[in-house]
Image (cartoon, rainbow, N blue to C red; front, side, top):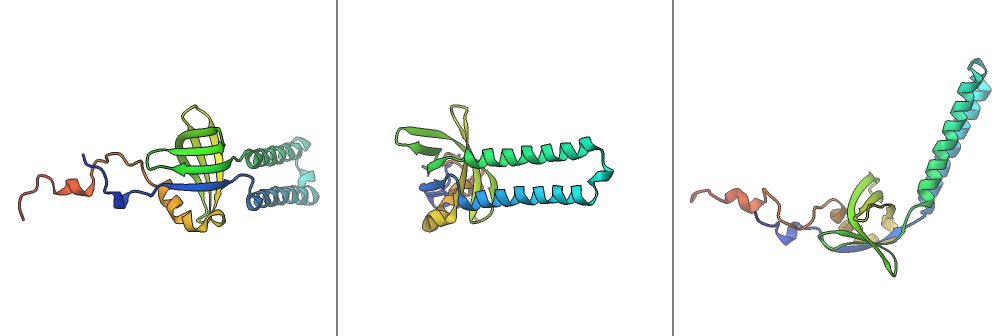
Length: 166
C-alpha cells in the first residue's frame, strides 16, 4: 500500500471554536419560541377537544425540548481545534488538550456543528463559524472531511501496479 500524495491530503489547520455562538443561541431561542406559539395557538383553537393529559404532555414535551436545546448551547466548548494530519486536538485551556475523532453532525456551509469523541471517552460538541477565521475556513472544511494521512488502499498509484507496458 502507498500513502496518498501530499497534494491530496488536507493541510494542518488551527481554527477557533465559537463556544456559545450568538447566532446559534438566537436560532435555538427562535425555534423554542415558535414551538411555544404553536402550542398556545393549538390550545386557543382546538385543544379543548383533546384530553387534558394530551395538552399537558405537549407542554412537557416542549419544555424538555427547550431544555435540551439550552443544555446543548450552554455546553458548547470554546477553544482552538487543531488538525495535524493524523488526529484532531481541542485546546480548551492552556493546560487542557483533548485528542480524538471528529464527526460532522450538521453542515450549513458557513457554520458547522461537530462532535469530538476524545480518546478518554468524553464527548465535546463544537460550533464552528466561517466568520471567526474566513481565510482558514476552506482548509478547515477540507480537514474535517479528510481521513488521517496514513496508507490508504486503492490509491491512484496502485491502479497501475501489475499492468504491463502500454
